[in-house]
Image: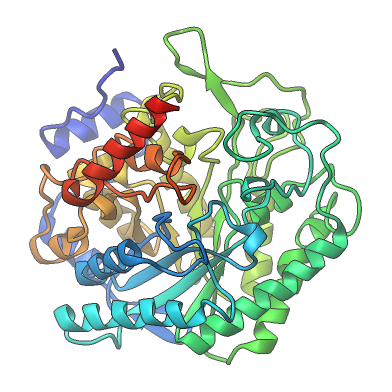
Length: 482
Protein backbone atom coordinates (compact mmCIF):
# COMPACT_ATOMS: atom_id res chain seq x y z
CA UNK A 1 0.00 0.00 0.00
CA UNK A 2 1.54 3.37 -1.00
CA UNK A 3 2.43 5.65 1.87
CA UNK A 4 0.21 8.65 2.42
CA UNK A 5 2.40 11.74 2.64
CA UNK A 6 0.07 14.74 2.78
CA UNK A 7 -1.15 14.89 6.40
CA UNK A 8 -1.09 18.53 7.45
CA UNK A 9 -4.20 19.69 9.33
CA UNK A 10 -2.48 23.02 9.97
CA UNK A 11 0.11 25.18 8.25
CA UNK A 12 2.31 24.65 11.31
CA UNK A 13 2.26 20.89 10.66
CA UNK A 14 3.49 21.45 7.11
CA UNK A 15 6.22 23.80 8.33
CA UNK A 16 7.30 21.31 11.00
CA UNK A 17 7.69 18.45 8.52
CA UNK A 18 9.62 20.65 6.10
CA UNK A 19 12.05 21.56 8.87
CA UNK A 20 12.36 17.89 9.89
CA UNK A 21 13.34 17.14 6.27
CA UNK A 22 15.85 20.03 6.47
CA UNK A 23 14.10 21.93 3.67
CA UNK A 24 14.01 25.70 3.37
CA UNK A 25 10.30 25.83 2.54
CA UNK A 26 9.04 29.41 2.94
CA UNK A 27 5.44 29.96 4.09
CA UNK A 28 3.57 33.24 4.61
CA UNK A 29 1.04 32.60 7.43
CA UNK A 30 -0.96 35.86 7.23
CA UNK A 31 -3.87 35.29 4.81
CA UNK A 32 -4.33 39.02 4.21
CA UNK A 33 -0.68 39.36 3.28
CA UNK A 34 -0.99 36.26 1.06
CA UNK A 35 -3.79 37.93 -0.89
CA UNK A 36 -1.86 41.20 -1.07
CA UNK A 37 1.37 39.60 -2.33
CA UNK A 38 -0.34 37.43 -4.94
CA UNK A 39 -2.59 40.31 -5.94
CA UNK A 40 0.32 42.55 -6.94
CA UNK A 41 0.32 43.66 -10.60
CA UNK A 42 3.30 42.59 -12.69
CA UNK A 43 4.88 44.43 -15.61
CA UNK A 44 5.67 41.91 -18.39
CA UNK A 45 7.33 43.60 -21.34
CA UNK A 46 4.86 46.13 -22.77
CA UNK A 47 1.98 44.58 -20.82
CA UNK A 48 0.66 44.65 -17.28
CA UNK A 49 -0.78 41.57 -15.59
CA UNK A 50 -3.29 42.58 -12.94
CA UNK A 51 -2.07 40.05 -10.35
CA UNK A 52 0.80 37.64 -9.74
CA UNK A 53 -1.03 34.41 -10.59
CA UNK A 54 -0.66 32.41 -13.80
CA UNK A 55 -2.29 29.40 -15.39
CA UNK A 56 0.40 27.08 -16.70
CA UNK A 57 0.22 25.69 -20.25
CA UNK A 58 -1.55 22.34 -19.80
CA UNK A 59 -2.61 20.18 -22.70
CA UNK A 60 -6.16 18.88 -22.63
CA UNK A 61 -5.57 16.44 -25.50
CA UNK A 62 -9.06 17.46 -26.62
CA UNK A 63 -8.61 19.16 -29.99
CA UNK A 64 -9.95 17.88 -33.29
CA UNK A 65 -7.95 15.59 -35.58
CA UNK A 66 -7.11 18.71 -37.64
CA UNK A 67 -5.64 20.44 -34.60
CA UNK A 68 -8.47 22.87 -33.90
CA UNK A 69 -9.87 23.44 -30.40
CA UNK A 70 -12.97 21.36 -29.71
CA UNK A 71 -15.84 21.66 -27.24
CA UNK A 72 -13.82 20.61 -24.18
CA UNK A 73 -10.97 22.96 -25.13
CA UNK A 74 -13.36 25.92 -25.16
CA UNK A 75 -14.86 24.79 -21.85
CA UNK A 76 -11.45 24.50 -20.17
CA UNK A 77 -10.32 28.00 -21.14
CA UNK A 78 -13.69 29.45 -20.20
CA UNK A 79 -13.12 28.07 -16.69
CA UNK A 80 -9.55 29.38 -16.56
CA UNK A 81 -10.70 32.82 -17.73
CA UNK A 82 -13.38 33.06 -15.08
CA UNK A 83 -10.94 31.91 -12.40
CA UNK A 84 -9.19 35.27 -12.21
CA UNK A 85 -5.49 34.64 -12.94
CA UNK A 86 -4.11 37.54 -14.99
CA UNK A 87 -1.58 35.51 -16.99
CA UNK A 88 -3.13 32.70 -19.03
CA UNK A 89 -0.46 30.62 -20.73
CA UNK A 90 -2.21 28.73 -23.52
CA UNK A 91 -1.17 25.12 -23.95
CA UNK A 92 1.45 23.50 -26.17
CA UNK A 93 0.43 24.04 -29.79
CA UNK A 94 2.41 22.31 -32.50
CA UNK A 95 4.00 24.34 -35.30
CA UNK A 96 3.97 21.44 -37.81
CA UNK A 97 1.62 18.44 -38.10
CA UNK A 98 4.39 15.88 -37.67
CA UNK A 99 5.45 17.58 -34.41
CA UNK A 100 2.19 16.89 -32.54
CA UNK A 101 2.51 14.77 -29.39
CA UNK A 102 -0.85 13.12 -29.94
CA UNK A 103 -3.55 13.14 -32.62
CA UNK A 104 -5.64 15.68 -30.65
CA UNK A 105 -2.93 18.22 -29.84
CA UNK A 106 -3.60 21.75 -31.05
CA UNK A 107 -1.84 22.82 -34.24
CA UNK A 108 -1.32 26.36 -35.51
CA UNK A 109 -1.21 26.96 -39.25
CA UNK A 110 -3.25 28.95 -41.75
CA UNK A 111 -5.99 26.31 -41.77
CA UNK A 112 -6.47 26.33 -37.98
CA UNK A 113 -5.77 30.00 -37.19
CA UNK A 114 -9.42 31.02 -37.35
CA UNK A 115 -10.38 28.41 -34.72
CA UNK A 116 -7.53 29.55 -32.41
CA UNK A 117 -8.82 33.11 -32.80
CA UNK A 118 -12.26 31.93 -31.68
CA UNK A 119 -10.72 30.22 -28.65
CA UNK A 120 -8.88 33.40 -27.68
CA UNK A 121 -11.90 35.63 -28.29
CA UNK A 122 -14.17 33.46 -26.16
CA UNK A 123 -11.57 33.30 -23.41
CA UNK A 124 -11.33 37.09 -23.35
CA UNK A 125 -15.10 37.40 -23.40
CA UNK A 126 -15.46 35.07 -20.39
CA UNK A 127 -12.82 36.95 -18.41
CA UNK A 128 -14.41 40.30 -19.24
CA UNK A 129 -17.83 39.01 -18.23
CA UNK A 130 -16.65 38.07 -14.73
CA UNK A 131 -13.85 40.57 -14.08
CA UNK A 132 -15.04 43.61 -16.01
CA UNK A 133 -12.02 44.17 -18.24
CA UNK A 134 -9.23 42.37 -20.08
CA UNK A 135 -6.91 45.37 -20.09
CA UNK A 136 -4.76 43.73 -17.42
CA UNK A 137 -5.00 40.15 -18.73
CA UNK A 138 -1.91 38.79 -20.50
CA UNK A 139 -2.38 35.86 -22.89
CA UNK A 140 0.46 33.97 -24.52
CA UNK A 141 0.57 30.81 -26.62
CA UNK A 142 3.10 28.03 -26.15
CA UNK A 143 4.59 26.82 -29.44
CA UNK A 144 6.06 23.35 -29.56
CA UNK A 145 7.50 20.50 -31.53
CA UNK A 146 7.30 17.20 -29.68
CA UNK A 147 10.58 15.74 -30.91
CA UNK A 148 11.05 12.15 -29.81
CA UNK A 149 7.49 12.18 -28.43
CA UNK A 150 5.94 13.14 -31.77
CA UNK A 151 3.02 11.09 -33.08
CA UNK A 152 3.04 8.80 -34.93
CA UNK A 153 6.79 8.85 -35.60
CA UNK A 154 9.48 9.88 -33.08
CA UNK A 155 11.74 12.68 -34.33
CA UNK A 156 15.00 12.65 -32.42
CA UNK A 157 17.63 15.37 -31.93
CA UNK A 158 20.18 12.95 -30.51
CA UNK A 159 20.48 9.42 -29.18
CA UNK A 160 20.19 8.81 -25.45
CA UNK A 161 21.36 5.37 -24.24
CA UNK A 162 18.53 5.11 -21.68
CA UNK A 163 15.68 7.20 -23.07
CA UNK A 164 15.96 5.53 -26.50
CA UNK A 165 14.99 2.28 -24.77
CA UNK A 166 11.90 4.03 -23.38
CA UNK A 167 10.87 5.65 -26.69
CA UNK A 168 8.54 3.58 -28.85
CA UNK A 169 8.27 3.37 -32.61
CA UNK A 170 4.58 4.26 -32.84
CA UNK A 171 3.98 5.80 -29.42
CA UNK A 172 1.64 3.02 -28.29
CA UNK A 173 3.09 -0.42 -29.03
CA UNK A 174 6.04 -0.92 -26.71
CA UNK A 175 8.64 -1.48 -29.43
CA UNK A 176 11.79 0.48 -28.48
CA UNK A 177 13.73 2.46 -31.04
CA UNK A 178 16.57 0.55 -32.69
CA UNK A 179 20.11 1.87 -32.10
CA UNK A 180 20.38 3.05 -35.71
CA UNK A 181 17.13 5.03 -35.69
CA UNK A 182 17.82 8.19 -37.77
CA UNK A 183 18.11 11.64 -36.25
CA UNK A 184 16.62 14.88 -37.56
CA UNK A 185 19.26 16.38 -39.83
CA UNK A 186 20.46 19.97 -39.67
CA UNK A 187 18.33 21.01 -42.64
CA UNK A 188 15.16 19.74 -40.92
CA UNK A 189 16.01 21.71 -37.77
CA UNK A 190 16.65 24.84 -39.82
CA UNK A 191 13.24 24.46 -41.47
CA UNK A 192 11.71 24.28 -38.00
CA UNK A 193 13.07 27.75 -37.23
CA UNK A 194 10.92 29.05 -40.09
CA UNK A 195 7.92 27.04 -38.89
CA UNK A 196 8.16 28.63 -35.44
CA UNK A 197 8.38 32.06 -37.01
CA UNK A 198 5.36 31.43 -39.22
CA UNK A 199 3.33 30.19 -36.25
CA UNK A 200 4.40 33.19 -34.14
CA UNK A 201 3.29 35.54 -36.91
CA UNK A 202 -0.12 33.86 -36.96
CA UNK A 203 -0.34 34.06 -33.15
CA UNK A 204 0.33 37.80 -33.33
CA UNK A 205 -2.35 38.22 -36.01
CA UNK A 206 -4.84 36.25 -33.90
CA UNK A 207 -4.31 38.61 -30.97
CA UNK A 208 -2.06 36.79 -28.52
CA UNK A 209 0.27 39.11 -26.66
CA UNK A 210 3.17 36.75 -27.21
CA UNK A 211 4.44 33.22 -27.67
CA UNK A 212 6.48 30.78 -25.66
CA UNK A 213 9.22 28.71 -27.29
CA UNK A 214 8.85 25.49 -25.30
CA UNK A 215 12.15 24.21 -23.92
CA UNK A 216 11.07 21.67 -21.33
CA UNK A 217 9.82 18.17 -20.48
CA UNK A 218 11.89 16.21 -22.98
CA UNK A 219 10.35 17.68 -26.12
CA UNK A 220 12.31 18.98 -29.10
CA UNK A 221 13.57 22.31 -27.72
CA UNK A 222 14.57 20.81 -24.40
CA UNK A 223 16.22 17.75 -25.92
CA UNK A 224 18.22 19.90 -28.32
CA UNK A 225 19.65 21.89 -25.39
CA UNK A 226 21.00 18.61 -24.02
CA UNK A 227 22.33 17.30 -27.35
CA UNK A 228 25.98 17.26 -26.24
CA UNK A 229 26.79 14.16 -28.29
CA UNK A 230 25.11 15.38 -31.50
CA UNK A 231 27.36 16.15 -34.46
CA UNK A 232 26.91 19.16 -36.75
CA UNK A 233 25.73 22.73 -36.42
CA UNK A 234 23.09 22.03 -33.73
CA UNK A 235 25.00 19.79 -31.33
CA UNK A 236 28.05 19.57 -29.11
CA UNK A 237 28.97 23.00 -27.73
CA UNK A 238 26.40 25.16 -25.98
CA UNK A 239 26.80 27.69 -28.80
CA UNK A 240 25.67 25.03 -31.28
CA UNK A 241 22.94 23.68 -29.00
CA UNK A 242 21.40 27.17 -28.76
CA UNK A 243 21.69 27.88 -32.49
CA UNK A 244 18.07 26.87 -33.14
CA UNK A 245 16.84 29.04 -30.26
CA UNK A 246 18.85 32.09 -31.34
CA UNK A 247 17.79 31.76 -34.97
CA UNK A 248 14.13 31.14 -34.14
CA UNK A 249 14.01 34.23 -31.90
CA UNK A 250 15.46 36.44 -34.63
CA UNK A 251 13.08 35.05 -37.25
CA UNK A 252 10.12 35.52 -34.93
CA UNK A 253 11.09 39.13 -34.23
CA UNK A 254 11.27 39.77 -37.97
CA UNK A 255 7.60 38.78 -38.53
CA UNK A 256 5.96 40.18 -35.37
CA UNK A 257 5.34 43.68 -34.03
CA UNK A 258 7.46 45.57 -31.51
CA UNK A 259 5.09 44.93 -28.60
CA UNK A 260 4.98 41.18 -29.19
CA UNK A 261 6.13 39.30 -26.09
CA UNK A 262 8.70 36.52 -26.32
CA UNK A 263 8.65 33.97 -23.52
CA UNK A 264 9.94 30.51 -22.76
CA UNK A 265 9.06 27.69 -20.43
CA UNK A 266 12.43 26.09 -19.83
CA UNK A 267 13.39 22.90 -18.04
CA UNK A 268 16.41 23.82 -15.95
CA UNK A 269 17.09 20.27 -14.67
CA UNK A 270 16.37 17.19 -16.77
CA UNK A 271 17.38 14.68 -14.09
CA UNK A 272 18.05 10.99 -14.68
CA UNK A 273 15.46 8.56 -16.10
CA UNK A 274 13.82 6.44 -13.38
CA UNK A 275 12.25 2.98 -13.27
CA UNK A 276 10.31 0.92 -10.76
CA UNK A 277 12.67 -0.92 -8.42
CA UNK A 278 12.30 -4.19 -6.59
CA UNK A 279 11.47 -2.35 -3.37
CA UNK A 280 7.66 -2.26 -3.71
CA UNK A 281 7.93 -0.45 -7.03
CA UNK A 282 9.74 2.51 -5.53
CA UNK A 283 11.43 4.59 -8.22
CA UNK A 284 15.15 4.24 -8.75
CA UNK A 285 17.44 5.84 -11.34
CA UNK A 286 18.50 3.80 -14.32
CA UNK A 287 22.18 2.89 -14.12
CA UNK A 288 24.34 5.23 -16.20
CA UNK A 289 28.01 5.72 -17.00
CA UNK A 290 29.96 8.81 -15.96
CA UNK A 291 30.43 11.47 -17.07
CA UNK A 292 26.73 11.63 -17.92
CA UNK A 293 26.55 13.72 -21.09
CA UNK A 294 22.89 13.35 -22.00
CA UNK A 295 20.93 15.88 -19.98
CA UNK A 296 20.48 19.63 -19.66
CA UNK A 297 21.07 21.28 -16.30
CA UNK A 298 22.54 18.04 -14.93
CA UNK A 299 25.84 17.66 -13.08
CA UNK A 300 27.79 15.30 -15.36
CA UNK A 301 29.59 13.68 -12.42
CA UNK A 302 26.60 13.60 -10.02
CA UNK A 303 23.67 13.34 -12.45
CA UNK A 304 21.03 13.17 -9.74
CA UNK A 305 22.03 16.73 -8.84
CA UNK A 306 21.24 19.90 -10.82
CA UNK A 307 23.86 22.18 -12.30
CA UNK A 308 22.36 25.53 -13.33
CA UNK A 309 25.48 26.81 -15.10
CA UNK A 310 24.16 26.20 -18.63
CA UNK A 311 20.50 27.03 -17.86
CA UNK A 312 21.61 30.43 -16.57
CA UNK A 313 23.69 30.98 -19.71
CA UNK A 314 20.70 30.11 -21.90
CA UNK A 315 18.37 32.41 -19.96
CA UNK A 316 20.94 35.21 -20.19
CA UNK A 317 21.11 34.65 -23.94
CA UNK A 318 17.31 34.74 -24.22
CA UNK A 319 17.06 37.89 -22.11
CA UNK A 320 19.67 39.61 -24.26
CA UNK A 321 17.70 38.54 -27.36
CA UNK A 322 14.51 40.12 -26.07
CA UNK A 323 12.76 37.33 -24.13
CA UNK A 324 10.75 39.09 -21.44
CA UNK A 325 9.16 36.23 -19.47
CA UNK A 326 10.46 32.85 -18.30
CA UNK A 327 8.59 29.95 -16.74
CA UNK A 328 10.89 27.58 -14.83
CA UNK A 329 10.13 23.86 -14.88
CA UNK A 330 12.12 20.62 -14.81
CA UNK A 331 12.06 16.88 -15.38
CA UNK A 332 10.54 14.68 -18.06
CA UNK A 333 7.00 13.35 -17.44
CA UNK A 334 7.76 10.25 -19.50
CA UNK A 335 10.92 9.20 -17.66
CA UNK A 336 11.01 10.84 -14.20
CA UNK A 337 7.56 12.30 -13.42
CA UNK A 338 8.30 12.80 -9.71
CA UNK A 339 10.77 15.59 -10.59
CA UNK A 340 8.35 17.73 -12.57
CA UNK A 341 5.14 16.78 -10.78
CA UNK A 342 5.68 15.68 -7.17
CA UNK A 343 2.85 13.22 -6.56
CA UNK A 344 0.99 11.43 -3.80
CA UNK A 345 0.05 8.46 -5.97
CA UNK A 346 1.64 7.45 -9.30
CA UNK A 347 -0.38 7.11 -12.46
CA UNK A 348 -1.27 3.52 -13.25
CA UNK A 349 1.76 1.41 -14.15
CA UNK A 350 4.36 3.93 -12.99
CA UNK A 351 6.81 3.81 -10.09
CA UNK A 352 6.12 4.92 -6.54
CA UNK A 353 7.72 8.22 -5.59
CA UNK A 354 11.39 7.70 -4.65
CA UNK A 355 11.39 10.67 -2.28
CA UNK A 356 9.08 12.56 0.01
CA UNK A 357 7.10 14.82 -2.37
CA UNK A 358 8.07 17.84 -0.27
CA UNK A 359 11.65 17.30 -1.42
CA UNK A 360 10.46 17.66 -5.03
CA UNK A 361 8.46 20.76 -4.16
CA UNK A 362 11.51 22.27 -2.46
CA UNK A 363 13.65 21.46 -5.53
CA UNK A 364 11.25 23.44 -7.71
CA UNK A 365 11.29 26.42 -5.36
CA UNK A 366 15.06 26.29 -4.79
CA UNK A 367 16.05 26.17 -8.45
CA UNK A 368 13.46 28.76 -9.47
CA UNK A 369 14.71 31.00 -6.67
CA UNK A 370 18.30 30.67 -7.85
CA UNK A 371 17.23 31.64 -11.38
CA UNK A 372 15.13 34.57 -10.15
CA UNK A 373 17.93 35.91 -7.99
CA UNK A 374 20.34 35.65 -10.93
CA UNK A 375 17.90 37.69 -13.06
CA UNK A 376 16.07 39.97 -10.60
CA UNK A 377 14.54 42.20 -13.29
CA UNK A 378 13.20 39.30 -15.41
CA UNK A 379 9.67 38.09 -14.54
CA UNK A 380 9.94 34.42 -13.55
CA UNK A 381 6.94 32.12 -13.17
CA UNK A 382 7.44 29.45 -10.51
CA UNK A 383 6.17 25.89 -10.68
CA UNK A 384 5.60 22.95 -8.33
CA UNK A 385 2.83 24.22 -6.04
CA UNK A 386 0.00 21.72 -6.57
CA UNK A 387 1.22 19.04 -4.15
CA UNK A 388 0.80 21.55 -1.29
CA UNK A 389 -2.96 21.46 -1.90
CA UNK A 390 -4.84 24.03 0.22
CA UNK A 391 -1.57 25.45 1.61
CA UNK A 392 0.02 26.17 -1.77
CA UNK A 393 -0.74 29.89 -1.81
CA UNK A 394 1.10 30.38 1.47
CA UNK A 395 4.24 29.07 -0.26
CA UNK A 396 3.57 31.08 -3.40
CA UNK A 397 3.21 34.31 -1.45
CA UNK A 398 6.37 33.61 0.56
CA UNK A 399 8.38 32.96 -2.60
CA UNK A 400 7.23 36.28 -4.06
CA UNK A 401 7.88 38.02 -0.76
CA UNK A 402 11.45 36.71 -0.65
CA UNK A 403 12.31 37.37 -4.29
CA UNK A 404 12.33 33.69 -5.30
CA UNK A 405 9.77 34.16 -8.09
CA UNK A 406 7.71 36.93 -9.65
CA UNK A 407 4.55 34.97 -10.42
CA UNK A 408 2.99 31.84 -8.88
CA UNK A 409 2.06 29.36 -11.59
CA UNK A 410 -0.91 27.03 -11.18
CA UNK A 411 -0.96 23.84 -13.25
CA UNK A 412 -3.01 20.69 -12.68
CA UNK A 413 -4.51 22.39 -9.62
CA UNK A 414 -6.51 24.63 -11.96
CA UNK A 415 -8.07 21.60 -13.66
CA UNK A 416 -9.43 20.48 -10.30
CA UNK A 417 -10.24 23.95 -8.93
CA UNK A 418 -10.58 26.60 -11.66
CA UNK A 419 -11.70 29.26 -9.14
CA UNK A 420 -8.52 28.80 -7.12
CA UNK A 421 -7.03 32.21 -8.13
CA UNK A 422 -10.20 34.09 -7.22
CA UNK A 423 -10.45 32.37 -3.83
CA UNK A 424 -6.82 33.21 -3.05
CA UNK A 425 -7.35 36.87 -3.89
CA UNK A 426 -10.74 37.38 -2.25
CA UNK A 427 -10.52 35.07 0.76
CA UNK A 428 -6.86 34.21 1.27
CA UNK A 429 -7.92 30.60 1.81
CA UNK A 430 -8.64 27.55 -0.33
CA UNK A 431 -11.27 24.85 0.03
CA UNK A 432 -9.47 21.63 1.06
CA UNK A 433 -12.32 19.57 -0.40
CA UNK A 434 -11.71 20.78 -3.95
CA UNK A 435 -7.93 21.21 -4.23
CA UNK A 436 -5.95 18.84 -6.44
CA UNK A 437 -4.73 15.79 -4.50
CA UNK A 438 -2.05 14.90 -7.11
CA UNK A 439 -3.57 11.47 -7.73
CA UNK A 440 -2.46 11.71 -11.40
CA UNK A 441 -5.77 10.73 -13.00
CA UNK A 442 -5.15 13.54 -15.49
CA UNK A 443 -1.80 11.96 -16.43
CA UNK A 444 -3.44 8.55 -16.73
CA UNK A 445 -5.87 9.94 -19.29
CA UNK A 446 -3.04 11.60 -21.24
CA UNK A 447 -1.35 8.22 -21.62
CA UNK A 448 -4.39 6.34 -22.93
CA UNK A 449 -4.38 5.91 -26.73
CA UNK A 450 -7.46 3.67 -27.15
CA UNK A 451 -9.92 6.43 -28.10
CA UNK A 452 -11.22 6.20 -31.70
CA UNK A 453 -9.33 9.43 -32.44
CA UNK A 454 -6.19 7.94 -30.90
CA UNK A 455 -6.24 9.98 -27.68
CA UNK A 456 -8.60 10.40 -24.73
CA UNK A 457 -9.16 13.96 -23.51
CA UNK A 458 -7.68 14.76 -20.11
CA UNK A 459 -9.04 16.58 -17.11
CA UNK A 460 -9.80 15.96 -13.44
CA UNK A 461 -12.12 12.96 -12.87
CA UNK A 462 -12.31 13.39 -9.05
CA UNK A 463 -13.33 17.08 -9.08
CA UNK A 464 -14.86 17.48 -12.55
CA UNK A 465 -16.81 14.23 -12.41
CA UNK A 466 -19.68 15.15 -14.70
CA UNK A 467 -17.34 15.53 -17.67
CA UNK A 468 -14.30 13.38 -16.92
CA UNK A 469 -15.86 10.62 -14.80
CA UNK A 470 -17.37 9.00 -17.93
CA UNK A 471 -14.11 9.65 -19.86
CA UNK A 472 -11.94 7.74 -17.42
CA UNK A 473 -14.52 4.98 -17.14
CA UNK A 474 -14.46 4.56 -20.91
CA UNK A 475 -10.63 4.69 -21.02
CA UNK A 476 -10.34 1.95 -18.40
CA UNK A 477 -12.93 -0.17 -20.14
CA UNK A 478 -11.14 0.10 -23.49
CA UNK A 479 -7.81 -0.70 -21.81
CA UNK A 480 -9.26 -3.86 -20.24
CA UNK A 481 -10.65 -4.97 -23.60
CA UNK A 482 -7.19 -4.48 -25.10
